[in-house]
Image (cartoon, rainbow over all chains, first blue to last red; front, side):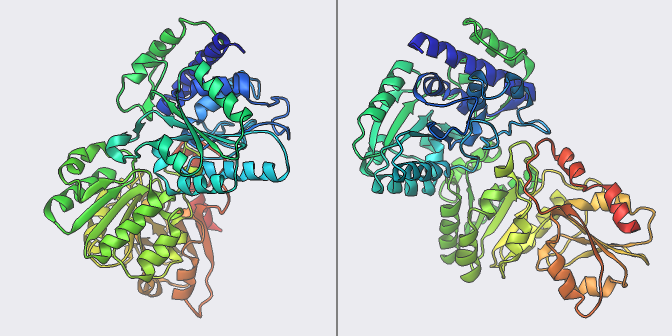
Length: 278
Length: 290
């Protein structure tokens, strides 16, 4: 995909996030929207996968450690044909195939998450196993900024560096907010890029909504392996891409009434794409 | 019930200088002014459950009365070693208030379910496990326990009893109804349902809000030799050891109305799950009829 196509794909992911969450009347929209551009780059250009064979052994892996962003992952997977688009209408509903947090029973999902802080360790295990087997694919992991409060994140960070997991690339969604407010007010984490460097990682800070910058940084990390894991700090906006959501200060998990759904889709429909019927 | 505990914590922090309150980033907008006014004693530590338990233990060792609030699976399962070693073994008094027990957060998936909480906690000697059925019962139990120097877990439900609001005592069961047939043990938020199911039945109903310590004396005194039906809003069998131990030497038939010991892979509302797993009046009556 070229950058324009990736941007359109990101827009489609956002539209389907809105539709899926809107069908249920609300959900974790803020942190889902903030990673849509990353997901468009990963699924549109970077990752090796086979929707017909989600467990393909040669695939790249993705662990979404911030499991509440599952609506965005599901939307990307549906758009890429891992399962029918109509499944998105079931999000969080009785008997659903798409639970609210990232769930390994869904085709294309590599780890069940939802309890924050645990996914990076799982990604370390996958990456370590691949290295031992001499296999060349990459393991990607997405963590939240608030999630980096958890001690287990930093235990995994030490492990990844100690075992030279240069096939592991972790994205840190730095949208600057968690449930109870801004990271700076809840728990100051300081300079995260520097912290990961001090743990023995490569670290980069990019505009998390600039698909070209994201793409080039991932390409470089995959190509120029130096024995270190890589952390890419995505400077993002919680609710990105839809101004009426961005403007809600506490937009972690909110109600999404029909009127707001229409407003969101109206903004996103300025660019045409593939979407659930709403 | 959540509003009641927030009001109680608010009052405690404002009036009692040796108390501290911690939460773990789960939406404390209702007491934001408290967090801002008393930042050294009322704080959101971020997403940091296990470390927070250690910090609370340290404060308790220094003479403070800590109270923690969070989501039940992360408070009970992620921190089990801290509960065992930091709280129970060292005998430190920390109060833990958990929301989202069993399937109270029904739409968020398995990471947010916690039907094993009561059973897990009851396996650790010295830990008090209190399961109020209403807001008033929570306040009463909290007032009795929060300064007793023991680790105490309060299971706060979003689905309280609406018909029955009982004057409860820590460590004591309440006799709600005496009859000649079976003995029904109603735990916490199951009381309304039990009383509806038993309204025309000649049974004894005992109401338990203290799961640990368990009131063996009341059961021994009230049990008349018939079947025991345990109605519990957590995994089935959580109270079996206590029941059998209380009635040692006697033959007893126990039936269970509770969540089956399986991984929950279905999603939907709280009511959907209660129906799916048979926590309803129909199953209670069926258990009493067999």
